[in-house]
Length: 627
Image (cartoon, rainbow, N blue to C red; front, side, top):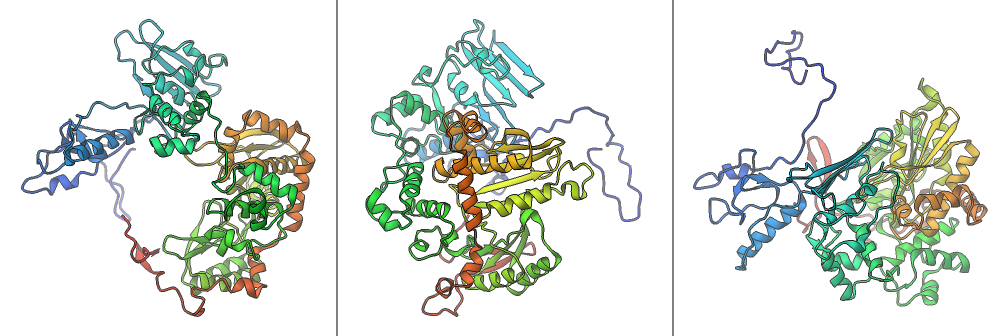
């Protein structure tokens, strides 16, 4: 039953002759953009016409029937059509801007509707003439039900020119294929996943200058090459001067390939103060044992540092030497705002506190303490997706009092504020679930206690599922462990970003000792070699040889550093201390947690709260307008 009237309490459900129960094998939901066009009805002196499917009707210069009103973006129905993509929205804005400023406006042209879905686990892309509507079009199709992939390339009648295509289950070829529409495509079957594993016959060098690299911002290969000629030597430079890769991000990989194709040695300097990459700076700090930033920058860099290199070096120092607190003299000023106050700053200047609950476990007594703290400090409470309790709305001066009560209850710093291990999520495993194959709760607790406080290039999340039903969603984590009847499967590098991705299998059916050693090595290799703010997924993609090379290093010890990586992690485990407890024991550190140095007992008057739908919500900072 797709819909039915709601019966009155105690009354049988009324029958509706227009509603029928259908027995079906497949239900298809057609979803998309619904334009918000209510303003058209309220226009004066008369309402503005709307398209049959919604949207404010405009001509191809984006003008409505009222010469003083234009419509742009997804509420505009250009010649009766609403476009739910970013590129047509930009185009309509440019047309109106040209008209308003007196320049010659170019009429709206039917846009490129190529798109790639950016939802975790939903690999779907279409481009060009995806439905083979061109006369003489010849579709080439490969359907692989074993691997769950489908690919279709639409070629012209000669079979040599690419017209369009559809990719499902594996859309990695989209970035290369979309710019090739209208061009000759040698060996098209090599681009389809199940075609036998042949390498594609063309690379980015084969694209013509007119090929559109970034469809969101209409940037061609010629535009990219011109920017490189003018001095752009990194992906960041290309983003700045061409806007390519700044919207959906699906073309960023091609930008790097174009730099390589043009023979540009990409600049890997951390910032203007250090010509070295983060990996090289990590090795410098490890080799010299320097943990003082002024000494370090005098020896290896120039100037006094910036908002990029200071937090990066603070993280490296903390990774290499966990015996020093992040707020020790000389290190506190290097930290990002979250690390500086050991809590997550919120948009109104207040902070949130997330106590550690290993594996999601909490005792009744600890739960009562959390509730009492939230009540006494008037905090907003939310259960997170990582099986933690987040308390929002604390002022800086309230943080030590909150921590003291949590520490007294046996709860530690959750370190949800740092670029470090956030949490290890778990299902109930063999403790309670009848399907559980291994003790996932105990393993999740062990992993969280082992890697807590590990500073890394970016935040880390883990998950442990007790069976293949995957209740802990381990394949969406940087480290994912799934139980089998023979042991544990280890998945790595699943997380979000511009292109969310599932974790990939690193090794299967491991005993627990081997599992721990592989995780030690993987994390040790990652924190040593990844770039600043690089998630594990992006690190794997950027590593030469990809996951295969990382598997050789971690599982086969191809570089001969496995023992060093395990020793590095063992030192971290041995030296761990609770950062909240350390602050409470140090009067000098406690002095940092006041709203005003000259009035330590005065709360910050700029932090304000309101009510929305019965919930406590932060109000904007004074003088800051929010849309």
